[in-house]
Amino acid sequence: MTTPETPPALPDYTSHTGGARRAPAGTAVPLTDPSTGKIWARAHQDPDAVDAAVDAARTAFLAPSWGALPAHARADLLHRLGDVLVAHTEELAALETRANGKPLTATRGEVGALARWYRYFAGVAETMEDLSRPLSDTARALITREPLGVVAALTPFNGALSLGSWKLAPALAAGNTVILKPPPQAPASSVRLAELALEAGFPPGVIGVVIGGAEEGRRLTEHPDVAMVTFTGSTAVARTLGARAAERMKRYVCEAGGKSAHIVFADGDLGAAVLAARQGAFSAAGQTCVAGSRVLVQHEVYEEFLRRYGQAVGQLRVGDPLDPRTHVGPVASAAALERIEGYVNDALAKGARAVTGGRRATVAAPTGAGFYYEPTVLADAAPDLAVCREEIFGPVVTVHPFDTEDEAVALANSVEYGLAAGFWTRDAARAHRVARRLEAGVVWVNTYRLLHWSVPFGGYKQSGLGRENGVEAVAEFLQTKSVITEHGTPADPFGE
Image (cartoon, rainbow, N blue to C red):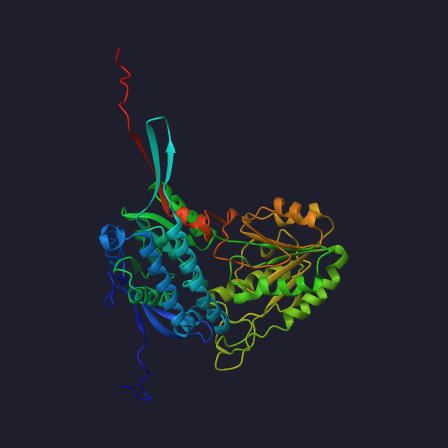
């Protein structure tokens, strides 16, 4: 019972291992709502949960209830999990918004789409077949693909549930067991996912959750019974995890940082490009790996584009993510807000010009104490400035003019990242030519941010290894075995 003098107890989130939440243990870390700056829950970081989660996952992998389950039965479970998640859309969307500040309208859409991912990979699970190849008149090879075992899936704050499902669905379709490690500031939706998976019929241990920070992540990724690590997050952490996985010969897939170019050629649809560049950069307050944070515009239309783009971005409503009128919510933390502010102030001090934004946003109570930054468009920024080359992960875009196609491609490819790129043109020959030349794993032509469960997603250069989505994603979670059988009488190579 609570009174006006005694505020209600905060919810506690603990790791989920072997089919149940663990008792609170370890370090209790406060979870902050980025829209208000207030603590709304506690998460318990318990290093001992790692061994418990791995033991449960390994046991489940070897048990007949999962390890011997035929593909069609795994597919049925994936269908049910997708349906259960969608049935809990409101609850899960609210947890995601509390964790990362995305507008509730956006997180509802993300959760609502998850069933399509699980259904797609259920279909892939049912269509995987072994291959048979003749080697001679009497010898044949059977080529089969088998699951790896226990997979550690490290997910980001900006999509612990949605991007976690990008890893979970193909890993389960392939027959693995999975331990999700969400970021320490956003564990709630992953814990609920594990609980809902039990409701869908998954055996205990097939899906586990470890809550924690760097230490729990280290223990999990170094554990000898973890066969694979898959990660979404910063390039710096991706490199560390990659080195750790390589040292232990673990399978490793990562989707890391981005600094994506969004190119507008003079012959493109300028009005559509303005709107796509706005949506492509400022969704989730710019906290997405594919954010089109560098807009490159051909000189002939540069001034007109800049005028229209500045106006369009200036019309975005910044505010309470629970308000359906809000376009842009807060960034994830006070530290993120300070980092974004530092990038912009450095650019302004070095000659850049704020077309719109360029400062913290003023948001009315009760959310005024949150971490808000105005959607910002910078012009006249030298391409070698940090704001133009480094991933900011915030609502900041730089706009640059170019003269020729070669110059546009060179500018787009000039950073260390290669996750995504997009461009606008009505010239079909140019569309094919430029798409081939851009060093990016995903290229959009006359659109931006169009993603689909059946289309591979991943980066070039420092933006990642391997692919998510599509049948290619399932292949990442499988290992190949060749079984060679001689049906005749083998000749004695040392005989007469």
